[in-house]
Length: 610
Image 1: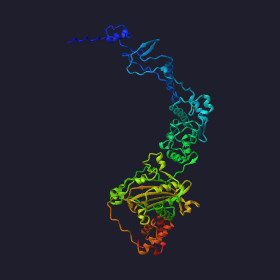
Image 2: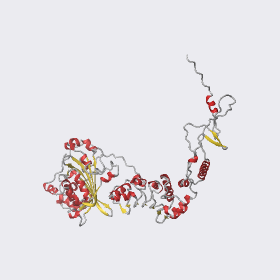
Image 3: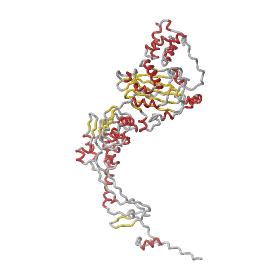
Image 4: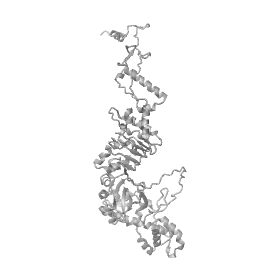
């Protein structure tokens, strides 16, 4: 058997340290164990090492601005003293500390990271009067009467040069993006103190980048006019910090970006229109961009009520107001009828001929909603209609460049621009690429619902025309539903529309193509609160032959209003037509007029109530 090796002496480590001179020769009085090594910088057992790292810290203007109280002054003085002491020590070794001029060894910590304070650059602190001088500079540029703060070319100002102040735009390649943002924040915070609050701000010719705009919304969120002319903003992303789409500067009305790469590059590549559209999308409140107005399409949208009155729970089986028919007010119904009866047949068979009806500054877009409506899915319409199974959506999604302009699905950028078509030539080219359609305008008016009313368009008035209906897609012969919104204006004398025989011209055209849903949703009558069991549809009312012949002579789009007035008043068809014509085809006005004069009408004005 091999002999068992002798165990090594327990004090081998201490003997080794003493042999190389790293441990003292004295032992503790109570035993032979080595004396514990300790950190002489802190008289604590266990040799716990203190944090000897000294961080240099430049006092930026914004920090001096914040630390204006007594506690802040003390903290600032203490930090300066630490930095001065660190820089006076030319030597620092991990695990060693200087006591009384001698170098003492301390316990090293495993995987410790230390850095010589002498190697950390100590930046000069801001002079105590910097903020006061910057405030004086901002005050000198402030016009309280006009609420205008002129901060153009700050780096070239004699006051800035004389006092050696750091301001946005000062050429210094060693200053990073965070310092640039802090310097700008100081200026913006001082501007926020001005009274009355700043309404117009000019930051032109300051060599600003995106970093300089980070805190602008934080300190000056209510400015209405902003000039960033002559700066170094290169991409749309540089404007994200002030974009209303990001809930920034939501009160901004005018913006100047001339002589910035983000604008000049687009115009050099003949993309000026796309640039303006993208800016309007990002800054939704803008009215003036680079001293030019931004054209907007206005819609009369009812505002939400601010009343705190609770809405009672509906207990009735139908809504208080019944479903009405087509709503046409403020315009002669004949103009609407003539436009639609000419437009849709040409859209079905000769789309290129629609070139003349579109205004030179018109826009067109279409969107696709392929989701089957809940009511149609419950009724199983897409299974009962054989040809609808042949319909596919690919022909609509990829018919033209840009495709469907469904803003819920688009991610912005180029796809949003490509799906908006401007100008008659581009619009007609797009229309010709869409799948073929066939609108059955002559068969029955029940398939269509029309609303028309005047709206403001800039400084003039225009006509909003909304058509809900259905069409047959040529080829599969399936039926789709659609919503078409036109913005119309009277055709000016000498215009192409007037020369081609159109009474109106199209300013804006929006087409929504969707899965088929029954036209019963706009059938006149009580509007049920909840779905009820379907009842057999009542037979259409019958008229005497003479009355029926008079009704057949009425245009399809106006026939439902004539029938409704006949039913409510008992008038003959001819008297009902005269009453509606005299009241601009406004059913409510016609009914009120009838109530006022019904006692003076002759007996032959009435017939059997429908």
